[in-house]
Image (cartoon, rainbow, N blue to C red; front, top):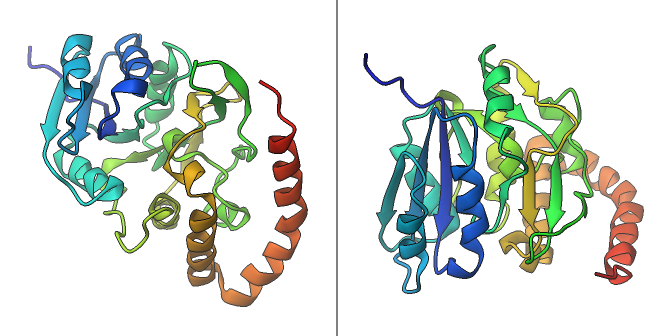
Length: 254
């Protein structure tokens, strides 16, 4: 009997990620649902990244390692290489929240939604859960939902491959947000996995380190898709949320 095509393409983009990659590899390898391929798109790492990938023995692993123009360029390469019906971008350092995440997503995939999505918890460098993501994924996700910001973490935003466009490389820090908007514009329906977190997100990521630049890009994107004046008015309401998050982060004790 011919082997079934993978339902999911789990994609990890790497560049000298050896210090954070092992939990990601382990979480993919431990999945109870096995109709997936694992793509590692590497930017010609010079550390032990590729050695760790090879030693992990994740089923269905394919590796491409060559210089690229950055994270989103590598993600575009991955879209071109993927064979699965759905794309999952799981960054180095991030991980599935349990061994049964793909199994839960597969149940949602039976109805062929454009997007399968869920909740995200934050973890520190030791893998300890430090809290919920400050934005909560809605149970009914639409294009209008993202007026309030990126309510669904990119790693928890799983897209049917035939609907997935290329990332717009003019955005260095928030191309993922703009990509999600274009997907939501064409998605026929979106499936919520449930209230249990499906992704553990490592807080020290690219967007976290360049938070101000990311917010400025995101504001430009919002103005383009939702209108400048409505976006300006809406941002006045974001100020209390921003200040509350800043206060919470400054008073967080590990």
